[in-house]
Image (cartoon, rainbow, N blue to C red; front, side):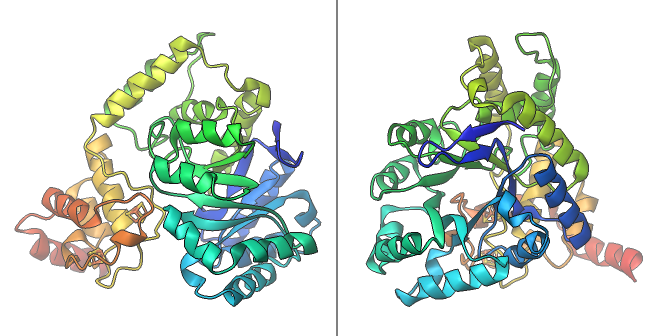
Length: 391
Ligand code: SF4
Ligand code: SF4
């Protein structure tokens, strides 16, 4: 494992971090993956209060094994559950109890999007609360995760004495959300950056269009070597010197093994800024190939769920993108997998849209899904297919 040094406090952090949001359902498999990752050198694990049962599961894996002291735990408080100052203590106490620990290494405010969203936290006394928790040793570093526009990122970044920031960035998002501009400003302020969604919810690995797949199949680095699309994507993020660690939501052993290998190969601090002009041009061409795609930019985070009408929004978008990008999703697959949760159930109430960190026009997206998959015979055919296959 390669490590990078946190410029704020000297912590030696693994280039690869474990993003727990996409833990597999199976507890034994999850525990095995986390333990193997730690044995492989991973020392940063990221969870959040709102990931269902996630803090508890991580706490159970680490407890009583001696592993707690080998990792930096990052977790997040959701701002919308903080209505008064006392809520910080209440939520934090729950986190400690779930994680079976008495301190958090990297505590975040989750998903800030605008200066106003941060101001609301200040109004509820977050600055005094953090100062007290740091003084007691219960919080070691305090940061925020961000999903918003670039200007807002800069504003929030400069509005507090942050220890770190967590952003979504990958070669497709170079100019989106915090963007490269945000990374550079963070570095100028001495604030390390944790990266989430380096593969855009897996889309830059397995969900590529035929054109983008062909592009990466033919691409060679300066030494004439081919790499997988995931390797190219991760390498782009590790090439940024501002990045402290890259989170990956690994839910299978082969994925973990590949990421450990890639972190070794590309994750070192001195591997940053080593992509040549020719190699960077390969990413530009991949972007062109991808941006020509008719995809909905959903990262499958699930924050928009549950929908009162039962629509499985991320699944609908994933199947739509699969169809548009890889031609791998058929109408039959859509029909069977979204039974009772299909796009056509949406009544356009709009409740999901404010919850989407990508700012997606979900209702419009679902209309596109419906147009692609749900023709006039959809309902009777769906009913028949379901009866035949499930009764
Ligand atoms: S707009 Fe549609 S998908 Fe979103 S919450 Fe309402 S019914 Fe569900
Ligand atoms: S629509 Fe938005 S909130 Fe819902 S899963 Fe996709 S990115 Fe996440």
